[in-house]
Length: 245
Image (cartoon, rainbow, N blue to C red; front, side):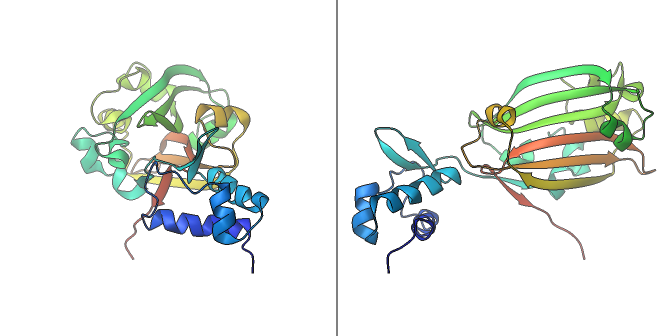
């Protein structure tokens, strides 16, 4: 029975996972897939397009379709937020990428009136001011995440949190120095398709969804001191959560 484009794409992905086609390897072209699977050229083309749309491969016009070389980032939400890491002066993001080259782009720190949703999340009155920290993260020179943090301006105004470089240990270390150490975190996640601006900011491959994470950081008294809205390229990340029973 002839294979469908979906079945061929799944088979090629399995062969990629098994190492038959390594990172950067050229995948069989349409003529080779037609011969191997006994399908029409349109079906073979559809299988390759599926792999590109799902982020497993990239198309190079005039050359062929190649296995994507980018290694997914394992985001361990539990370990990355540990107090031990920030006490050691390590950034949250370094726990995701290890020794891989990471850069911060488009860093902007500003003060503005809090959006209504952020004011509610932080327990602020409508019209209250917040310090906003916006940035993009690039790994191996590829944009993978955009994050925008909101903090009460009355709490952090004049501190290093309101400066581009908050120092070792990041803003959570600085919050602890202000007597507002975050000790509990909550994250709400959802997957969706990006809008055109988001796709451009993260150089999202066609058909690739994003993962939107909204994290709230709370003190031991239950006070919300930061809300962070993050947008992740779903093709670049694997998420891990570990819990005690």
